[in-house]
Image (cartoon, rainbow, N blue to C red; front, side, top):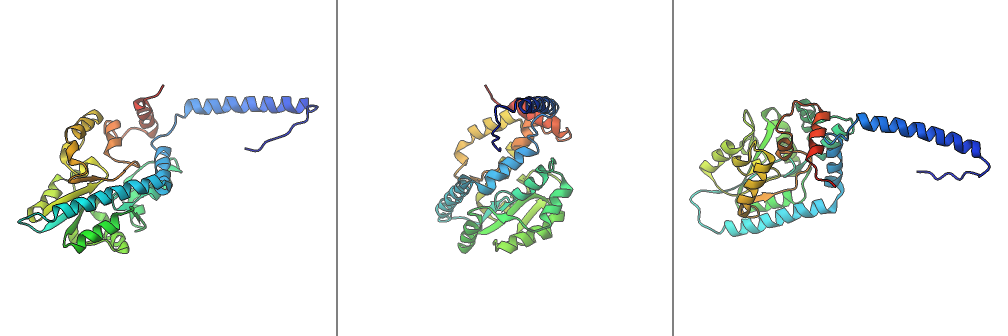
Length: 274
């Protein structure tokens, strides 16, 4: 904001400025009264800023993948009656979609399928820090990588191309299981588990690990995490996911048909404040 030096003799000018400022303040107050903070649009932009620029975000990702490497080295030395595999989510676990949230949020818009598919068709997702080196390391130890994602099957070609662009192992349609009907991943995990011993599950959403977390109220999700705390950091490796996810759906009671204004009001009511 520019600083303005005003001569004391310019009283009339000051009065005019004050009257104008008063009018602007009243107008701004009216705008604020009719437009609640849009957490569903500008919130993801703030989250994307953190994901793109915060060194702490990178540190958390490296921490997760360093831990995954330790667990992989521990588990792969055991005896198994099946070949070994890892199951990983894609979005915000190995590929970074934060530009999509910025593109939509700065226009005052939220998620929808057509715009999301327009984004993934660009095949322009960057990698999540640590993901590529970890999965390449796993492949070098003869461990097969399977990608289970709730991207739509129509996005298969673009997904394969984006993963191949960076050299992710097993980046082909035979190792990528996308959403066909249900968003639950248990059935797809079971398909992999029939033929492979799955050592680790990686994801940014609780549904990436077990169906017990699917479509649960936020209080129930928290209690289930407490009850299964020993799984995290062992077989379950969690990446930070703040842009979107079932955590948000749970806070909205999974009612995505509400307007963004009503969704924002619901989220604001959930916040602790003083």
